[in-house]
Structures are given as C-alpha cells and as structure tokens.
Amino acid sequence: MNAAGILQIVLYCAAVTAGAIPLGLYMARVYEGQRTWLSPVLGPVERLLYRVCAIHPEQEQHWTAYALGLLAFNLVGLLVMYGILRLQALLPLNPAGQAAVAPGLAFNTAVSFTTNTNWQNYGGESTMSYFSQMAGLTVHNFTSAATGMAVAVALARAFSRRSVKTVGNFYVDAIRGILYVLLPLAVVVTVFLVWQGVPQNLDAYATASTLEGAKQAIAQGPVASQDAIKLLGTNGGGFFNANSAHPYENPTALSNFVQMWALLVVSAGLVVTFGRLVKDSRQGRALFIAMGLMLVVGIGVCYWAEARGNPLFAPLGVDMAASDIAPGGNMEGKEVRFGIANSAIFAATTTATSCGAVNSMHDSFTPIGGMVPLFNIMLNEVIFGGVGAGLHGMIIFVIVTVFIAGLMVGRTPEYLGKKMEAKEVKLAVLTIVVFPLSVLGLGALSVVLPAGVAAISAPGPHGLTEALYAYASTTGNNGSAFAGFSGNSLYQNSMLGLAMLIGRFLVIVPTLAIAGSVAAKKIVPPSAGTFPTHGGLFVALLIAVVVVVGGLTFFPVLALGPVVEQLMLATGTSF
Image 1 (cartoon, rainbow, N blue to C red):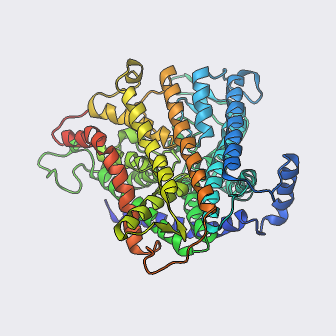
Image 2 (image 1 turned 120 degrees about the vertical axis):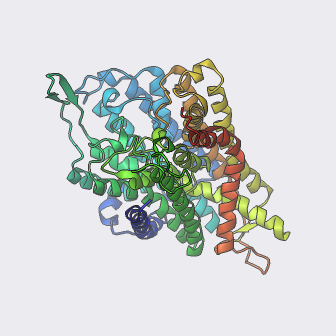
Image 3 (image 1 turned 90 degrees about the vertical axis):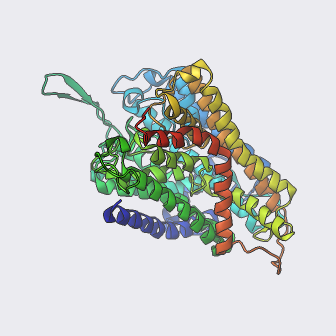
C-alpha cells in the first residue's frame, strides 16, 4: 500500500458522496411527482406513456397489486428476452452472423438480465448480435434497475405514511425511474465514454492482419450505450467477455474512475432519497454512514491483500509478516493501466453493489483479496447494493436491528414511528434466510453432483471458493464470477438461473408485504424509551447485525475455502 493508492480511495469516496447527495434529492422530487428541471422536456413523454399503456397515475395500488404488477412486468420481459435470443439468427443487426443462442443458455441469460444479475455464461462479442445487445440486454438493464428502485421507493413511502392501504403505483414508479433518472444519466455517461474512445456504432467487425499473416476479427458495435447503463443500473453485463478490463469498454484511467463512480452513485443517492421521502434526513445519513464504513473497510482489506502480494513470489529472507511480501504486489489478472488500487476499489465496489462489472479477474486475486468481494456479496449486498435492492435490503436489517434493540430495553421495537411487530420481524427474517438457503443449498449440490463438479477448474479450497462464489453471486444478483468456474452447461445454466430467481423475487415479495403492513400502521410519537435510529450507537449496532448474520452463516464454508487457502499459501502450497 502506498500514499498514491490511498489518495485514489479517498478521492473516489469523496466523488461518490458529492454526486450522491444532489442526485438523491433530485430522485426524491421525481418519485414524489414534483416538478424538476427536466419536466418541461420529459413531462409530455411521461404523460404520453401513461396514455399509451393505459396507466392511471393517480390510482395507487395495494401491496399485493404492486407485487403482481411487478412480477407480470418482469415475466413478460423475461419471455421477450428469451425469444430474442432464440430467434437471434433471424433478426436484423447481426453483421457477424451470430447463431441462435442455445435453449439452456438463453434461459439463463434471460433470467440473468431480468433479475438485474447479468451473470454471463458466454462471451458477448462471440455470441450476441447487435440487436440482442440493444433490444434485449440493454433494455433489460433499464427495466431491471427501475424495478429495484421502485421497490425501495415503495418501502420508503410506506414508512412515511400512516393508516393507508396503498404503497404507490409500480408502473408509475418504474416509468419515472427510467425516464427521469436512468435515461438522462445514461446519455451523459455514454457521451463521455465515446469521448474516451469507447465504440458506439453498428459497423461490421473489422478484420486485421497480424505480423504472422493471420486474420483477426476485431469486434465493435454499440458498446458505450450498454456500458453506461450496465454501471448506472448496477447491472454489470459486459458487451465483451473481458467486461471493463477490455480496452474497448474501459480504455483510460479517467474512464475507469468515472465507471467506478457511475456504478455506485445511484445506489448511494437512493439512501439520500430515503431520508427525504421519510421526512427525516438523519435516517438516510445514518444508513449512508453504515454502508460507507463497510465499503471503506472492504476496499482497504482488498487493497492491502493485493498490494502485499503472493508469498510464493517473496524474495528469500523476506519476513512473511511484512506489509509487502512480494515486490510490486499481486498484478496477476489486473490491467497495468489501472494498477492494484483501482482494481481493489472496483472489485470491492462492484460487489458491495450488485453490479458485477469487473476491471480485473477476481479468480486471480490472493485468497484474502478474493474473499472480500465474496464476503460483500454474502452480506446480502446491502453495502449500498443494487439500485434500490441494496436500500430495501438494508431496511430489512434495520428491522432486525431495532427488534434486537427492543429486546434489550424491553419495548416493542419501533422504526420511524412505526411499531415493528411479529409480522414484520418474521417477514424480515424470511427475506434474510432466503439468501443463505439458496447459496449453501444449491452450492452444496454443485460440489457433490458430477454435473456440478464438472464446472470447477481448480482442486481443493480454491475450487470450493469458485463454486461458492458462483452461487453467492447469482443468488445475490451480482453477476461477477471466479472465471475458473465454467457455468455454460445445462445443469449450471438451470441451477444458476434458479438461484437468480430466488435471490430476486423471493426477497422482493416479502419486502413489499412489509411495506403494505407498515403503511397501514399509525405513527407513534417518540417517547423516552424510543431507541434513536440516527445516532452512532444505532450505526454501530446495525453494522454488527449485518456482519454477524453474514459471518455466522458463512464463516464455516469461508474457513474451508479462502481462509485455509491463504494459510496453505503461506506454507508454499497453491491450488
């Protein structure tokens, strides 16, 4: 670790905070239906969409109708996406002549982009046509992100209301999220990336002659537009197989910094939005601090582990306890133009959110360095998390935290003046339990069944980590991977697809049920026994609950994977 790397981390955190606050305040106005500076241009478009889609924005929905609308919207999107991939060879904008995507892979990909996971069992430039990239993948990057944002807003709206039966209108929330937030930001980031050298065209693949006389196809296409929304919507699916490590997706140090900023700013901004919607900015600030502290610690540990390097490459006589045991640190799997610090920031941030975009290969990190992104995902990705999804996931942990605090003082737990009773606590625990059941249950099958074991490339603890990372990433709707894991088989396409569906919709539905229950409650004035949820004590307790739940659930399997691998690496054993 050095001063330059630490300075990069500080500047990154400052830039995200500086962008998140005004963006969060702007999004609060958008979701409250207030006039914004974009209203003169986008207001007529919004009203036109309502008329075309027969949406009545003044009619709000009970939580069950909200959930059914969300599920129907995403189901239609999944089926359309599957159809595009299966009919790819017959559709236009296919200059490379890409064949139809196989049924298993088409199912996995359709589920992946519908659930905001963007797990990719394929190389984009060698599998997808321009039409599939634009009309399929990029469109879903908008709709899946807007879905998560809508759920977070519905939950915030429920806490701000009293004795009502509605939580908003899903279609209105989704349209506003896309039209006023994601689209304008995506246009700006797209123009910036084009300026930095990212391709944005519909040209056929270029052909170049190598020095040996061989022919090489150079893929291009509408890269910048997909790049922008894959980051802003915390989607993560790359146009190219190498994702943001590819020079066409991420050509410069400046583009890398802006991409890291883009993948976090909307998620961080929504925490500010939450504070404004519940009419208490202190609540949003407390959540922001809790998330920010966990993110900074994760970045710091990852940077330390990678800067320290691989002990197998340490010169003779070097103290194994030294801060840097291998000169230059661990540069395996990293781009020289980004270096260790920016690779660590990207890895920790993309897994603290549910983005999944990568500018380095996590499979090549040191065991402890690779454990950081894995552990971030195992915390249910509530360290800002996916746009909307991270916020509503953190509110679930807040409910558990105030429940524990209530037990300590002998009072019914409260949050924002709403009593958190048995129904809310049970639903909160259900949403938390879904994640480890899927990760450990489906992951266990993958390391036992022959069809599952065939996907693992490395022996021993590293192979266990590969499989564990795959099912944590898919259930957590992240999409990043340890690249040694080969998921393009009928078994893995099916099981990973199932994990994505579980991690998305079996969490969203009980979360909306909590929103419906909370919205119907009265607001109770604070009293002398009310536990404050905006101070340092609450922040510390919330972090402890998040870490302990993740740690106690997954520590045994982490001990058998990255922890034992790190210990054995120090003895000269590698996998």
